[in-house]
Image 1 (tube, one colour):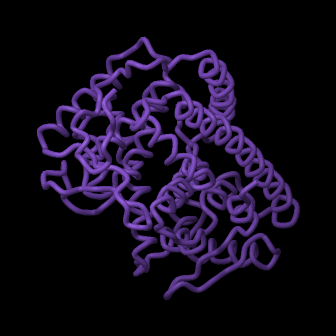
Image 2 (cartoon, helix red, strand yellow):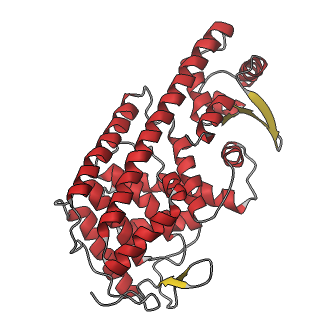
Image 3 (cartoon, helix red, strand yellow):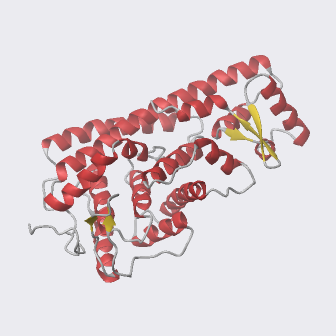
Length: 362
């Protein structure tokens, strides 16, 4: 292998599949435990009375964490309020996170129409994240630098070269059946980040592709998992592993990192899901006891869909008319189930119990 030069466009980025051994004993062993953790999470999600109930919340958490990797920071509180309130947020970071969540939903909807990960799909996703007409990079001079301004990587240059690399990646994702799906997921993520096809939004697009691939490969029927939290926690290691694949063709550490990310995130997701389900059951029992006229299964689901709710949400789900739902929310607040807050001209109601579970990093 020729000595890699960080300052020269990596037009020699090898095509897939990699020539190196990507199925060592250690990798295969880790694939089993990561696969088991995913299967447990998948089973729990499938057994929920309403598997899509927590999706908005989970995808917002993933959007928040993925954006944080790129130093786009917002708070859970600001995020959920912006999503629920009619008043549009002025905060750029919050807007970017909400666009990311929209891009994730868009990707999942596109997979229903055409179950393939393609260059066109990647372009649609990045355009949704950036809320512009971005396409494949066609101007030279893109370099990735560290905080000291030192060039650490120069991705392939020239639109034709980039498109050829993406076409090879597309073929690898959709046609190569010989590699274990979890190992394949790690490989495709590296390759996408190394191609770096867009001027901006590559990291976030690449992390959305991970979730779409978990869905596409049948590993998770509902990709209700947020992987970016793990990357934030282990950011230095993440970039070191990517760099070692590029510079030393060292795939094992990188693939083990990605498998560990899947296993730990699936286990944490399962715990969090169980906590939310338990909190939901306890709240339902208490409301039934204290406010039997207010209680309904549909109402409980609305209160646990997102940390904030408002009268309109209850009306849309046919819980009652404006006056009735107003009385319900007032009674729920008086009995300590919700806490109201004025946002603009609207009154939002916070389910503190749900927000606390989501804020907990354990």
